[in-house]
Amino acid sequence: MDEGENKARSALLEVEQRLTDLACTVDPHKAAERAHFMKVTMPLLGLTVPQQRQCLKKGYSFSALSFVQQVPIWRYVWDHAQSHEAKMQAVLYVEKPAERYDPVWLWQDLVPWVESVNCWDQSDCLSRIYSQLLEEVPELAVPVLKDWNKSSNPWKRRQSLVALLFYSRFRQVFPEEDLVFSLVEARLGDEDYYVQKGLGWALREAYHVWPQHALAFLDGHVGALAPAAWQAATEKLDSGVKQALKAKRKALRGR
Image (cartoon, rainbow, N blue to C red; front, side, top):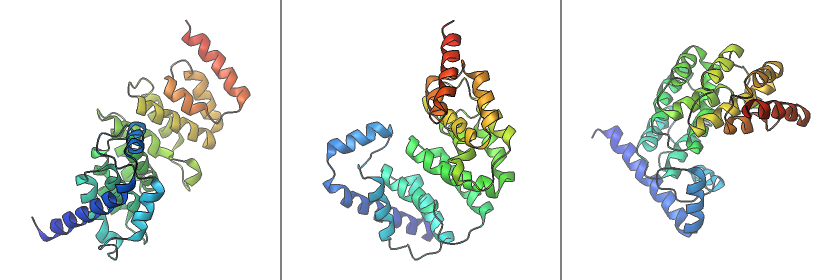
C-alpha cells in the first residue's frame, strides 16, 4: 500500500468514526425507517442530511488540503465506505468546490463513481454534479450519457436521464433539446422503477425549458408512460392540462 492510499485509508477511518460517534443517539427504529425509505443496500446510520452537512462543515484532519488534493481522498472514501453516510460525505464535498477546478479532470475522475451507487439518494447527488459538468464539458459528458442510456446498470440509465437537467432552474446552459427527448424516449419501456422515476423527472424539468415539446411528447406517449414516470412527469402541470392527458391515458390504457 503506497503513501497516498495509506492517507486515504486513514481518512476513511476518520470519516466513518466521526459519523458512527454522531449516530450513537439515533433511534434504531428511525434509522431502519430511513433505510427502508432510501432502499439503500448498505448499512445506514440514520443521520439526517443537515447532520451530515454539519459533520462535513466541521472539517476533518485533511480538510486544509486543496480541492484537487482532496478529491482522490474522497474518491477512496466513496469506493470503500462501509456506511451510506460516509459515501454521502464524499459526494457532498465534491458538489460544492471551494475553488476553481479543471472540469475535464473532474469529469474524468467522477465518471467511475456511478459504478458503486446503491440507492436513489446517492444517485441524485451525483446527478447534481454530473449535470453541472455536462454544461462545462459537453463534448465529454454527452457520449457518456448516451452510453449509460443503454447500460445494463439501472443507475447508469437513471443518470442518463436525471443528469441531463437535474433541476432546470440551476442550469445556465441547457443540453441540446433533441438529445434530451431522444434519451427519454429510448427508456420508455424500461422495467426499472427508479429509471422510470428518473424519466418522469427529466420530462418534468424539460417542460420548464421546452414546454411545447414536452407537452407534445407527453400527448404522444401518454399511454406508454409507466405509472412512476407519469406521476413524476405531470406533477407540475396545470390541472386542466393534466386532466386532459389523464383522460386520454385512461382511454388508451383501458383498451
